[in-house]
Amino acid sequence: GKSPMMPYLERNDPAQSRTIAELRDSAERRRELGDLREARDGLIAAAEAAETSIRVLTDERTQALALRATIARQRQEFREGIRRFLGQNTTAIEQTAQRLEQQIDSHHYRDALNTARKLNASLPPERYVALENGTVIDFQKAIMWIADGASPEGGNSGQPLDWYAALTWAASVRVADYADWELPSEEDLRDLKRMPVRQQEKLFPHTVQGVHWSRMPSQDVNQALAVDVTT
Image (tube, rainbow, N blue to C red; front, side):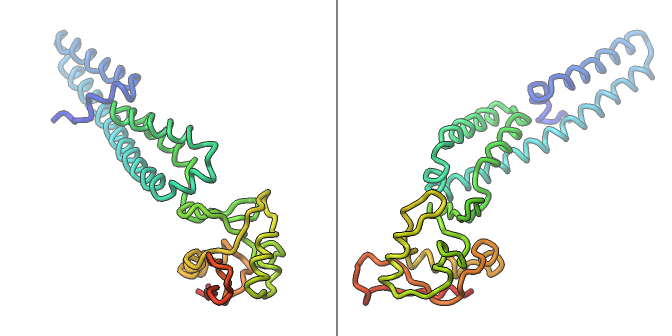
């Protein structure tokens, strides 16, 4: 039977559609002239070309739809991080996402796949992303970490501090052109503890295993909470 994708082949691959049509027209002319064998061969060639093209188009459609679903999850899960850290690109991301929807709705699957790949490349591939400036972005929570725990900026060169000193130290840090650093929240530290060991070691090398201070809404040291981030 006729593939349900056949009506969409012309808009996705007009050159191949013309080739298939020409093969069929030629086969029909051969049939009218009585060259039945030539006509049969022409129809077989047209059918094989159509089958191959439909198979490719169906695969492109499947990939485009799967990638669209992945992109939707990324944009939802990392919405705040994208807004904060990719702010200059959010308009372009939104426009590209709209174009992707239009292409899928109009069954331009080949174009949609190319658009989806471009859009996917502009989004964070996972929650934690290491940058070349020595920081790690948590796109889910829209926060930035200093990566290297052995550096003076990343962890006071690994030297312990009491809570008040830690607050002062964090406020004085200047890294990657940012000057608004602070101690992490309790939940932020627990996120690190839940991270697989290899991922933690890769993203946050030289970080001292053990207890780390969290920030608290109160300036009362008795309410300060330390979290063990050892995995």
